[in-house]
Length: 476
Image (tube, rainbow, N blue to C red; front, side, top):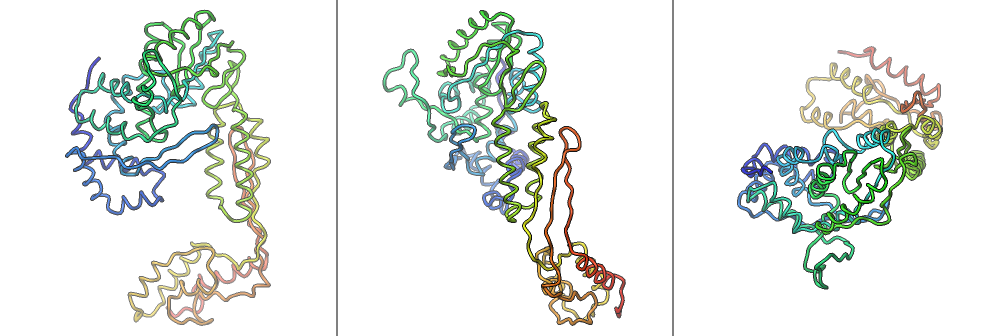
């Protein structure tokens, strides 16, 4: 096997660190740690580059929390500057590893993923009668550090790159690993050998894939099991002979023992493909694919919460729409037309009835301000103009605040152009907004918005905007 060298200068190159910072902040720019780093990004990246060059880089402590769905797991999040280092490392290692990974390993790879794995499995089920499904017991918490480092050295020979990879592995926080004994162990082996990679690190996903790459090639090359696919620690083999699969299972157990890993005995199945296989969040059969039941239950519970939160004003439609679209995109990969039609009848979001002053759009207020700028006296100070531009518009501002933003801090009366009189609060009622999602076709949904505004408010809004926008009464 070819071993790669001269990788270190590519990792610490300035443009690679900038690209790593851009990747690390995707979807997280509003977080305090990211904003603090980006405020002095050049200085932070330069400091990080100097630490890497001088071999003085040390990862920081993790932030951990437990999740309980679909099962209890410890999630560990590295500091943001460490995540930048992880991306910088994998920007260089990812093309190398991807060339050596098995073509039917689908986790954390471009062009692969859970949906491609489900489609591949259904295609294989058309040509085979039986399937062997295996899952490794406590995979991430059970990865042995020494064995993983030996795996690194079979492909990489750059000493400084290997030192950085070893530092990342050694900085892993303690994981709740099971007590497993292997041939040759004594009572102190479990204490002496460090195990476990943090779930949540980008490097952990790639290192875990790397750990099982030998198993992929063993099954497909040496044992000639062509009908094979793996997603992280969950893998499936398909054959027409049940006894052959039982013999392969024994060889799998023996190979995993050399890695100090064990198959989860309660998650090993040899069954006919016609009975269906649960894999990567789908219930897959040769004829059709369905979503897992617990996935649908969790989504209905989430929609129920979003409806309540929208009614009370805790969230807005901009927070709801991406969540619905995300689940719809996932469900589109299964045969879910009837399910979507049934669930979409519940997707009606209604605001609670409240009494508010009339609301004007941001565009209308900006048009009023631009029209007013043409007739304002030249003696107005530049500081006041800058203050107007720095003030943000919002639909929840009062009428008095809107007049101040439109006319500036100077005094303006009812005769001033573009002035919006404050209406009596008892005359205008906004009866809320209803957002409804209804199915149009299978896997698609649209939103219909019906603002419930009283006719008197609509007439007042039209008359006011006509007077302000046509220039009537302007001296300009």
